[in-house]
Image 1 (tube, protein in one colour):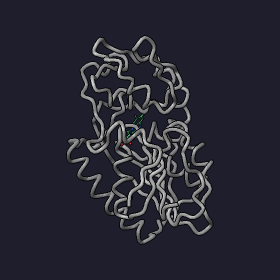
Image 2: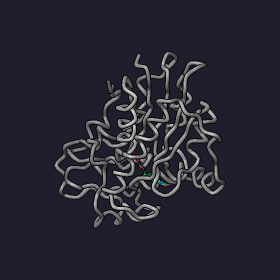
Image 3: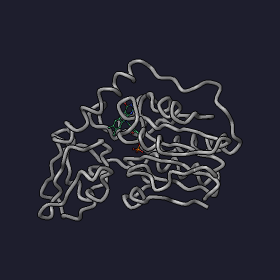
Length: 260
Ligand SMILES: Cc1cc2nc3c(=O)[nH]c(=O)nc-3n(C[C@H](O)[C@H](O)[C@H](O)COP(=O)(O)O)c2cc1C
């Protein structure tokens, strides 16, 4: 087992990029993806265990809470959490802290690929994707230094009431949103969307993706589609796609990424 383990969920790659940057600074780190059930749930011998994940509707992406519950860590393990968000960090850190107490926690604001809560790629306050990426890299370097030195946060993560409410209604809204996926004639039937879907919600039928309703709205299918053939209702027809410039669909599909 590697010295450090970072559990990561990522839809458009920002969190995987952040996790990689922290891992490179720490050395000897396994990044275990939580998009499907994590390949490694026993982290008893790791010196540091971290969680890097995005804020979804004020809370955690679907599945992450259950994944975290399945992870066993040692009594002396140093723990940390990093949330990526567009406008506000939400209650995800607090939810994880209630399962596995976090010695250290931090947030990184980054580009948003959320389609309904705010206009595509708009951050609060607005920033270009390039500037957002540069800032994310700088913050990840600072967080990595803290994690290396096992810095402890003064306070536990907070859970604002509005985010609690938002996060509690989201699980019932996300599947309804999935009904709005459509595919245009630009689709080449490559099946990347189906292989990327963390829920196995996309099946290839007659060479075209067919969407079910078990969807966490990570939007990897839509944002990484090589032909921009997937849309979510009318909202995405004229919008640019976004995924982190350093992360590919292949990276997202890895189960464990080891960084020396
Ligand atoms: C379904 C969904 C819901 C989101 N909800 C919020 C939110 O409530 N607040 C916020 O600040 N950002 C929100 N975002 C933006 C993401 O947290 C942000 O873009 C993050 O960097 C994405 O990380 P990723 O690229 O690793 O998936 C949301 C994004 C998605 C796809």
